[in-house]
Image (cartoon, rainbow, N blue to C red; front, side):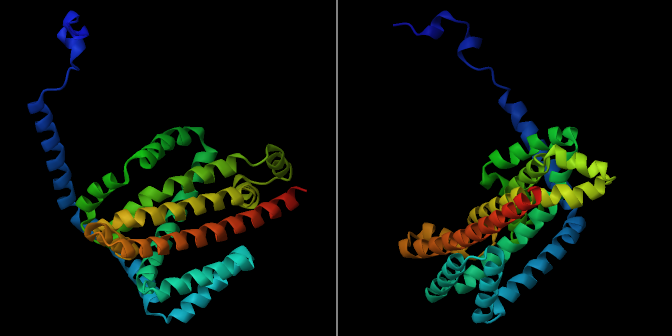
Length: 303
């Protein structure tokens, strides 16, 4: 029985591909040029890496070398201040005690330091970009496709250019995590500012507020609940990416998970996974509680 393609021209049956030799030359040229660029920019790359490395090392040393009871009390105090919820605070304390009891305290502190630095960098990058997007449709039109690529690109792909530029280590892992985690911070900052009631902005204009005053005194305070949702999502995505980034030397709980997969250690993988889930739940519940408090505060202001 003849196939359908037997009645059609070859060009309609087989997709016309670019010549293999030409593609090979193009790929080799791009790879060589990229490697040459990296070699030529070595000094600049070192300058960029150094402050990030120092900051990350300092925070990691603080978390790891400080007695566990002090870190635990600090965490409980911060979670209580943020959430004002005794159940969330007590659950966080119990979870951290259990993590320490199974011998994962130090690895958890390494992961916490990485997530903390990644979240801070994502906030410092994401909020200004989100503000620019909210104030300019043109900027939004340019940035949105970039964010689409950052969010849909497989996370393993981020590691290729990062490793080629920065090598193996914690800073390359940090950069990969930030690239993966910063889009929700940008998008939700943009959304929160755009959702501010126009009547409120008109009232601010009536009182003679400048653009800067409207931004810092009206738009950002009213957009804080949405911005907090962005911070929440950034933290969750940072925790998810830390495991993948452990492939290039980040360490912590993610490294243990990868070793458990490689050696088929079920209990090791389960315990480290439990620790990651516990941290994620703690951050998620605390940041959501803080967001709800901000929401009530803004509703009182509107009222």
